[in-house]
Length: 293
Ligand code: G1P
Image (tube, rainbow, N blue to C red; front, top):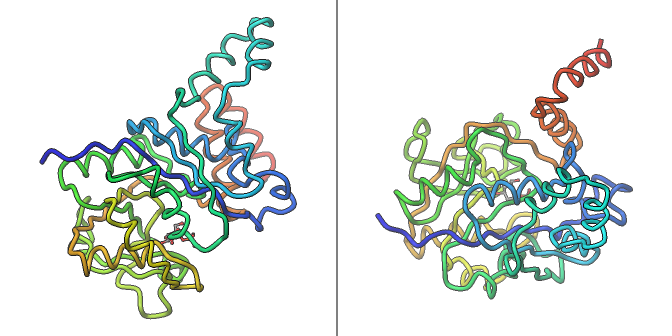
């Protein structure tokens, strides 16, 4: 089935990062580094690898440095070139989205993920789009969003990446019920945001990667509050599925997920991304062992 190409990705980056204070007092949590790259750069890399052409950041107060990060820095570039640091210069240039490929809009009040996504409606326009939650680093050979775009080319509709979590963790996430829990791609039958005990339809949680149809915006525009008294994206996805009869598919992610909104997840991500560096992995392993023994 020929589908409309997914060209745009939304990155909600307005959150306060209170769990990482004081590190996040004057610096956005998305700029904390996982090994040698800011968290947001890892997620933009994933989107770029999946063929995304336009990167839409929903920011907030004190997030200006994210915009600077994705811009040229002539003085720095000049200095690197003057000092023959060509490798570093090339790397910086490679990481950069091209001219006109970024947009920044602000979520003026912290009203929830659904509200943050709605803030991107004018920039997304009337086309399907990807949504990536930067806290959740998806580590795998094939980037998670690439797998989703492949599935989208076959199935169309709306897609959500899912993975199992221990049953006592389901209340932290959006949880889906599907028609075939073993399949790589399955039809979503139910969704619930942060289910209370006994209410989760499965242990498959929403991992923070989505492909959504633009009709989601009209539903988000109702600004109805849900779990935690926030405007929840999951509630509008439920309405899009149940009332508007749009299909939703779960794409089972088989890689590792590191929740960089938690201290333990953040530390684990730093170790794993450091070990990915073939030039450093051996020394890092030795150092880690010596620290633990
Ligand atoms: C959000 C979503 C939730 C999803 C989670 C993944 O929750 O609402 O469905 O499972 O991200 O991190 P939040 O982390 O904003 O509470």
